[in-house]
Length: 273
Image (cartoon, rainbow, N blue to C red; front, top):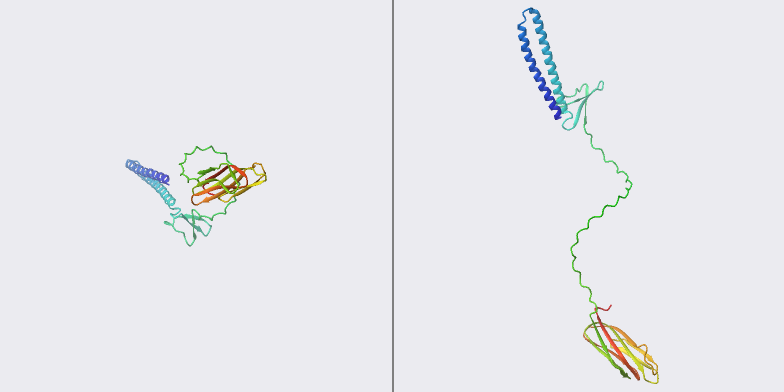
């Protein structure tokens, strides 16, 4: 639009310059007319013709300017500021002309006014299209750079305590006929796993029985033939929890049986499940 207006302005300037040149030409022609002495009628005729030619030129120029100005006005006003194009439909013949309603109106007797938008209203949204087929798997990308080392994590809770202490006692060689304590061990409060072992020999002429027990409750017996040694040895095992310091004992009994190698071990543990 700006380019068209600039061109029209240049054309108008050229037309005004042309009119100025015509006025100069008129002065020159008038000087020549004064020098016409030969034939007065011929001079009058030439003068009239020149005036007509000059007037015709001016009318042509003015008409051209009017057409240009009308085109500028029409170009600037159609469509209107609201984007609507106004027209007149002739009832007879069906001729359609476009107008600018700010400067012209339809002839209601012979024409029907019609309007339409330069840009139509937005249509409704179309339905969702079908899902396209899955594309082929792309090539594997390059391996990324190694990330920064993460921060040191918080210190975890302390683990459960393991075996903390073991208590052991040993017994000598004894001849037992009645119940006799072979090994005794004092321990502090806590939970314990207890193991004990005793060897014995029968010195009687008849088979005899060696019976042993722990003070925590476990017992074991072994029949020994006459003149024979106990094989395997008597083995006992138990577990217990003391709420206060206590004494663990290994006691054995028999008839004419010599015992030796008695061992008692109490292992303190964190908990018994």
